[in-house]
Structure formats: C-alpha cells, structure tokens
Length: 98
Image (cartoon, rainbow, N blue to C red):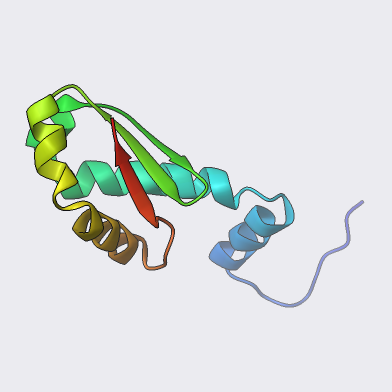
C-alpha cells in the first residue's frame, strides 16, 4: 500500500511536478500555444488556419490564404509577443507562416 504524506499540497503543484518528472512540458506547451493562437487571432484568421505546430521554440502556422499569410508576415514579432504574454512566459521565439 502507498504511503500517505502528511503535508498538504495543492493539486496544481502536484500536476506541475508530474509534468516535470515525466518531461511532458513540450507537449503541454504545444497545446497551450494552439489554444493561445485560436483565442488571439479570432474567427477571421482561424477560418484560414489549417495547422499550428510548435517545434522547439518555433511556431509553424499553415494558412489557406496567401493574402492572409502576407498580412500576418508583417506582424510576426507582434504575434510572438502576444502569444508569450498570453502564456505568461517565453515559449515562442519565431513564427513561420506557410
């Protein structure tokens, strides 16, 4: 039978420890970045977004509109800043629009 610890810990702290021990942070970051993209870009951009993938610290976004891709390319650094602010830490360093 498992030993019980008498000290109290929050569920959030336990989950964070599980994520660190099992090295799940990259997968959690990808999920968080996809959700941040969806929320920050709105319905107009999300309609043309086909795929959002985080590899390392680079965000790859596949778009179905070349006009939208060109428009977003002018604000890549703003997109990086907005996503990192939404997540509360620096996860994305570059954005590649395809």
